[in-house]
Image (cartoon, rainbow, N blue to C red; front, side, top):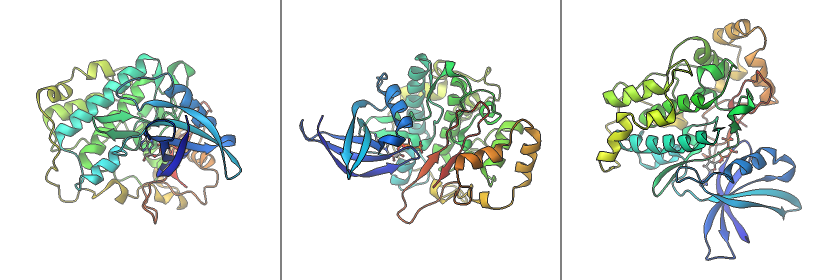
Length: 351
Ligand SMILES: Nc1ncnc2c1ncn2[C@@H]1O[C@H](COP(=O)(O)OP(=O)(O)OP(=O)(O)O)[C@@H](O)[C@H]1O
């Protein structure tokens, strides 16, 4: 297919996503995720996963090609354009801090339907979070398969610390249940407009808290009983006890949506709730001295140091800033670390 590149839609750790217009058909608009060919290993892996998936709840694959632009070879993954941007963008676009419960229920149902489909293929997404869920005319679709893996591949850990399940934070396993834990975190994200964990000031501390405290993210107090119960089923500590996608689809919180039409309105805002996910700056302290929590984790995990691994993954820890910062142009610029080592720690960070 012939196409021309348009404006930037977003940037991630592995690539930049642009609009693209087909010049061979009727001017169809789609999204193209591009990176220089020499650094396209992750994007090629994503292409392999996306090309075999076909679901109303997964962003559609449109093909791939290699182009020469400004004397560089670019690898391009073509996919369906999602005009609403990410779930985070959609919360901001509503001009309120969070979604109402009906919309959360509708979106959550679609995310779980997408995961049920993906998991039925033996695939684990590994990086479910609001920033990887895209909004279109009919709701939400799962995107960004850059961290995805076959469940049989074992422990090549990947993802974003804030959304990691306890067994992933401990470096034990990352199976289907880890995606479900992340959904629990996303529901909290949609309900509060903030990150699932609060009062943590660096990625090592959050990994320690998730992996070793036995705590789960706080469930919003003003949610309905059904919504709270749903989140609690996603956030069961033991991955073997945690509910699966098929089971969750029968939960009353998701069944409820079938009995109502969805109306998008802002709920009353709670005093003190974060004004936007982008206002949070929880990862910024990596350039400071290690916190008590991170010292403890280094002692607890005698076989490896999470902080060292995260810093290794970061490449140059002097320059890395962790977190939800806003750049001058206000574009989110996430980096999701990947590790193929068996006990690798994982982190979302900013360039
Ligand atoms: N199909 C699409 N339609 C519209 N916008 C998109 C689409 N795909 C991606 N985007 C935008 O581009 C951004 C980056 O995309 P994506 O998350 O896939 O990149 P990435 O490099 O894999 O990121 P990560 O750092 O999470 O690994 C998204 O957050 C979103 O804003």
